[in-house]
Amino acid sequence: MTRRIADLLRNGQPNETVTVQGWVRTKREQKEFSFVEVNDGSSMAGLQVVVNQDVPGYAETIKRISTGASVEISGMLVESPAKGQRIELKADAIAVYGEADAETYPLQKKRHSFEFLRDIAHLRSRTNTLGAVFRVRNAAAAAIHNFFQERGFLWIHTPIISASDCEGAGEMFTVTGFDLTKVPLTDDKKVDYSKDFFGKQAYLTVSGQLEAEIMAMAFSNVYTFGPTFRAENSNTSRHLAEFWMVEPEMAFCNLQGDMELAEAFLKHVFQHVLETCSEDMEFFNERIDKSVLATADNIINNEFARVTYTEAISLLEKSGRTFEYPVQWGLDMQSEHERYLAEEYFKKPTIVTDYPAKIKAFYMRLNDDEKTVAAMDVLAPKIGEIIGGSQREERLDVLESRIQAVGLDPAPYWWYLDLRRYGTVPHAGFGLGFERLVQFMTGMGNIRDVIPFPRAPQEVEF
Ligand code: 4AD
Ligand code: MG
Image 1 (tube, protein in one colour):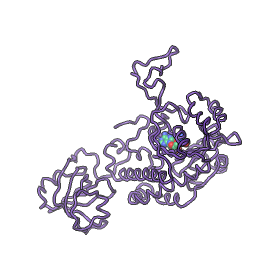
Image 2 (tube, helix red, strand yellow):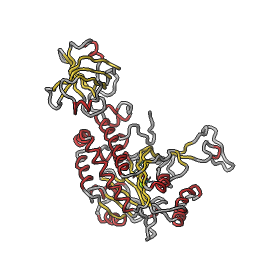
Image 3 (cartoon, helix red, strand yellow):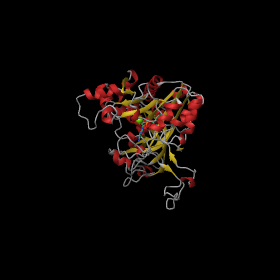
Image 4 (cartoon, helix red, strand yellow):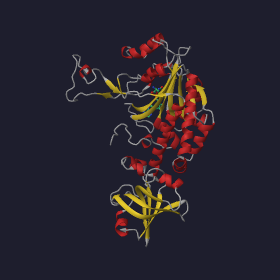
């Protein structure tokens, strides 16, 4: 029976007859036998296979095997005399699916830079680090679903093609069916989207929040988890043009409840990843960032810091630091400010609340001071903002004047306003940048290395 290697390393017993399939990591030829290490992606560790020269077709098969080749090997598990592994496989039969020419196969035994690996994203998942990243990514995604499902949240599926700008920031990619060499224009020389596929301008969504709010007004607690897109020209280690976002939305909930959910949520996801990916997390702690395990422990076992924007600004002013960007009430916080707060001042995840209305999106609920909104950002050490959320403006008149105040046309938001006309309730939600979370968990320095196929300015392949 074909078995996954992770299963064999954990549960395999001497004298069991098994078959494994995978890719060769290393081959070492001795006089009368060879060692072949096979990995099938189920774990960081591969299975050590001993191939004796009496295995049928030995000489010819061993010649065809090199790093990267795909193989199927059957044999018997035996106790391993080598250090660091409980069992190994004594091969009876070995078949090669596909060779990998050692002259040209780019992943040889040496350590490659992440930049180099990014250019061969079709092969890099076969390396130790990227393999560990994508197993952690999978475990985190599973934990996210578990967390919400256990709490009775409905998983809804918000659209990828959208007609509205959720963040009102105009950082959207247009989706068009036009032949771009023959775009129809109106009399005043604007693009005539009424002739386009959808009959109006459509975009790749920047967030599923507005649609999630619709669904929360029927199911109370919902979440969406899918790809989102930003056409901002940010070439940083924390921005992607396509990233995944987790967005819960809760009816009958205020900012306090929103913060509590966000904190319980992050704790749950870290806990699950530590439990299910311990080998990978130890690898990150050893090879990528020595603080990874301590950070996880800190998240799980300590309460997050909470501070208002106004208090945060005064902490920054009193810090005695010279920052590159100005610190002043009313200005947006830059990542150097966020990192000072979370990394140096509080030394743990920090929730900043009640930002000035002027620097936040139109849908956030206006506080009684009429200057700030019921917003909250969760700042993580080393990363900065990983979650952005708020209580939503549920009062029709206030929402209408906020839309006007930020200079948006209220007409396309008619349905969003309808939610305030018919059965409006206090509600709140947040968005977690999934790749930033994976970065935070693994200590990976560049966000392009925690998504299989990164999309960023001047970067799209595959
Ligand atoms: O703060 P943002 O823009 O919030 C929203 O989109 C809300 N509609 C969410 C909600 O309340 N339902 O984005 C949320 C998170 C950020 O905190 C950040 O982690 C991540 O999404 N994010 C990005 N991640 C990678 N690349 C980018 N370009 C990102 N922009 C935002
Ligand atoms: Mg934000």
